[in-house]
Length: 253
Length: 377
Image 1 (tube, rainbow over the protein chains, first blue to last red):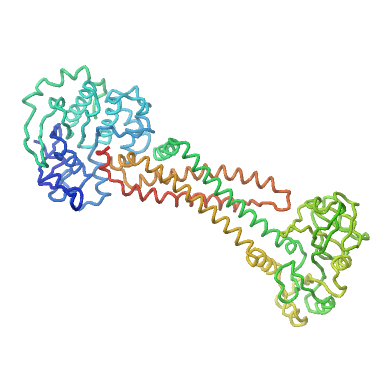
Image 2 (image 1 turned 90 degrees about the vertical axis):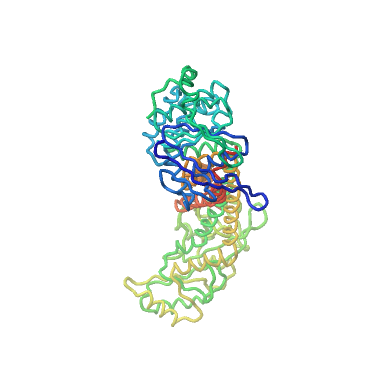
């Protein structure tokens, strides 16, 4: 495995207070390396999204340690956490979370704008990234004018345009039909392989398994199992099935 | 267009009814403040208009005089003592006061008479639109302002009526000499003014003092105070300030105008705060997304403040337009509303301040947003 981009060591996370306090993560250790698509599976309430939130510097661990590019987030203030997310992590959400009042290119550009990138270069990069996910003809479309699959591709472009070294996707196919789900997973798999990014996909959809390099099963806040998937089902796997679904793009930077 | 401004403007326009509510709130508030402050400025000018137009380096006024319209009187013979003070070139008596004008069509109306010597210095009318100062030398001649034609029941030179049973003939007409008390000014000679008001010939209201070239104002003032009993000697600025303080603050009129303006500002702030807060609440998910993708608090605050500023600019533009229409409509009335560049700039600053202050509640709300919200939606 390459040097981890994000690493969790013995992470415990408690949510809520008083009588409603629950331990969502119970000593989880996990490393996400570049060039690898990790699939995190498990039933509802198993702690998948909490782990993704902790790895994504949205939540801080109650115990244990999270390292981003070797830097511990222990004691980091909200502003520093935001900077870590901005510089290192891209998010893809089940419900896309695009800003409905912005066009596709502006939604993607947003990830660069929050980093202070000048408008002209941000627009150019956002346009390139949308072309890379096969949406060169939808640059000025508003989210309401896009299908679910197209919206998720815009969200992926937004997550990757800022050169984030890790992409964390929460149920990225959850709101999509099979064809669009496959297209989205194909893009995420290509991102991990072709740009050496760490991609973590949280899902309970077994159809995404063939795209994963590694599959981790969680239950009750613990990792139950972890196995390398490259030798099992990914030998020829998604490439043939996804070939027709892969958007005609300009390649990843 | 900056992405921040784009997000802000589209957030505002997404719910057009609410945006209209915001703008109406700002417009209502700023027009109200504009009118109150415009009236204040108008009163402020009118309160001192006579003092501003009097050719005096110093005013000799009865001791304790509160304002230009004060009914206290001086002894006319004090003029001799005044002229005896070294440095005094002229000491011109004038008489002022309220009396009753007989409206030709019936009834009476109060007027404010200003009487000055027929020749030489004095508080004479200005802005003549018909007739001239020389015409006031004719028997029974008075000058009135065109603003008050309706009130006085006369419309042109030659029209006549009575004041306290004494004949009055309109010999000159001015424009724009308006009274803070809304009582029409009537200019005439000193002697006739005394007759119209029943003031004894030996009594006058003020002396307008002109100094010799190079005379020391402080020394002259000291000499006048030493030589004449029961008087005060004021510079025009001091007399203006005293009149202004009496009418605008001593009577509560100014305080009432300021209270109205303050109320307008508060109402506007509350309306804008409420609509911005509810707009932010409607876009919480989007702000949570922004936080999740790593935007700083400052970036989000800029969006909210931009929303407030856009509302301010649009609201102010409409309010200022309405304000200028109101100013134009009242320009020739007895109670004109005054708009100055300083007031316009002040209103713009007030609008911006009001809107930014209104955005604070929304900013506080956004600061509390948990970016993890995006995983629960």
